Image (cartoon, rainbow, N blue to C red):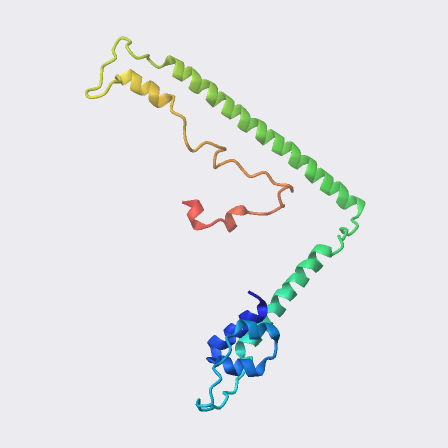
Length: 199
């Protein structure tokens, strides 16, 4: 179906015009093929043609224009931000550079020290846990008793509980998040923590 026919049909549905009215308005050959010819009868009374009123653009058109202008403004802002030249940091004196280098070096040394202490602590705990799991009594050893209504015994239940893997695996909550910058002098993180975190 051509665009012309779709437009004519929508006009017919909106304004309930007769085919004779549309026929008299348009002289397009495709329209004559699409519409049936009206009955040619001299006995039919002639009716006045209805005037087609075009809808004026109201508030919706202005809202659409404002919305489009806003999206264009946001696109322009994003484009300008993306295309903005990279500004170099201001030049600093040699004394300030030496202070920054000392702070950065001490931060790296402290981070390595903390990391090594945490890894050593975890390694010792894992070694102790494995040793304790080896010392657990095996199922069927002296003193083992069956549990009523279950296939496992007391010792078997202990071993199964000891070898169970924790679903909440991952780094501990107490481990600090690695940062790209050294800590700020005089900064107290507890001032910015929520009351929920403290409890």
